[in-house]
Length: 368
Length: 240
Figure 1: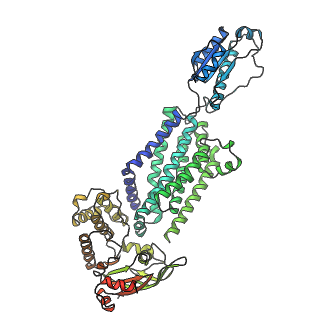
Figure 2 (figure 1 turned 60 degrees about the vertical axis):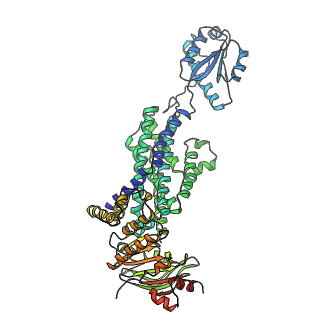
């Protein structure tokens, strides 16, 4: 036990004295969450739109006011005629133009079918679709409320309710994703580098010749990184909650335990990599290629797994991050308890034992 | 008499390649035993089998009276080791290195505090006591490394090319340290390819292609090979 303490102390010196790496390890979660939260986002905020109001009546005014009042849109311009729309788009002034037809209000009152035209700049198709959806929703709700006509303009209405993320904030998706990537990075990559560094410097031989038992060396190596990972988890969660208003509906304790499980699984992978490599650079490359890329691409962090080709969907099952993201999304957004994530937890547990068993085996072979 | 190290037909094969080919030798207690050979002759591999890093393919060996197959953990308690690569932590100070290595051999905190003061005074490196090891000249590091390897008073210390890249004056000082511990009864097993250093050893063995081709005191070897210096002995053996 005392030896372990001495070993951990030494390891903490290594971490604290390598200032550059430390800044990266602690700064990266901040940078990534802020970047994904503010800059890289697929939600719409204050998109610039223009109006062509040929009706100039009460209803058109009300709809315009409602569009302007929403956070999604800012009315950039009022265009006098339809012919102005094309040049307006070409100058890139707005993303969407709403055209109110003549006699909008009177036609609506009398039940004559009318249409409000939405014209979007589809050079960016995703944004265009989203803008159209938002604008439609706002216009329908206004029509429903304002017309005296008991029959709504549409005979069948779909009522949409976005559960767990009603405002479709992308930060709800990025916070769990970034957390997963950071934990994987700190746990797997940093431990594999830390262990191979001792091999490269020749100190590993001296440790193995000493009475320290190999498992103790490995445990001493990983404990500081477990702590570092948990600090990062806390930082990311706090950023998510206080800066982006991301809720943690479920139990924080459960969230912490699941994170610990994922951290240990990643550590197992890191140790496994380090038993197979001799230099820090190789360890880093393998961690990046074999762990980071699949974690980002195949975990459902950015690209939904359901829309992947069948083969990739099958491969995604062996990515620990996929299961972890499912678990933490459930806990954070839906507030579910352990009874709904035990299957995923079991899968992660299985992976953890597999990696640790494999690395213990390989570590022994290296000693022979 | 009981030997500090005895090897009998010790062999290590890597696939079809035989790195160490049935070497047999004994090292007496308190002896400075030189283990010579060209690069790739099998010195390091032989040493790794003795200190428990590598499992022999065949043959027998005892180190400090313990068997290298079954009792490696006990061997580890009784040996010190200074590896060919420099074995201190560069981002720790000499004091922290002493505390770490002393600690993993089970030294108590008060012992370590006293010992690190002693060592630093003995080596005359008070000025470097709180400098990171990476900023200390190589000669000092080597001496410190040696002091740390023998801090827990092992019965045998293994030195793997301890003086590589060090200036002649520091090498001289280093050998004085080796003499001192040998006089106190510690067995020193040292590999080197500096032939002048071979002269300092009580007995030397010369390895060629995994075999021990000669083993005796430097004086006897020079007589046997009718050579002026150990360098000539070595050249006669390796270039027939």
